[in-house]
Image (cartoon, rainbow, N blue to C red; front, side):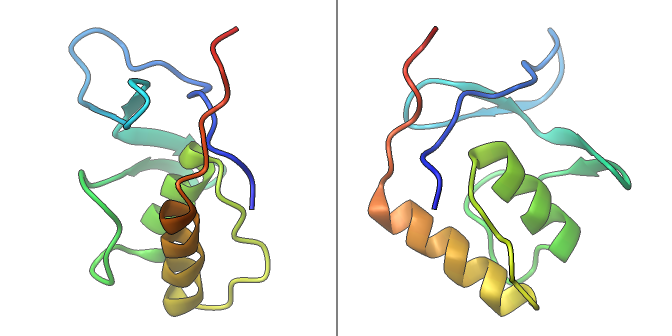
Length: 91
């Protein structure tokens, strides 16, 4: 698993965002290869779509390679969160 990372895209003023435990602001709408995906606030649940889980994992720096279904994705995300991996230090 990869350590948490600073957001590559800062939310624009007035856009919705979430703030992680390290104080970084992450936009709630994330551009992906298949279009923009809106990420719900809070921790991922089985109600989230696979696209939302993938966008959340990309935003948080969580490796989901090899995940075949939603259960695999949630397991990897949960393991990453349980490990409380640190974010990258500010530049």
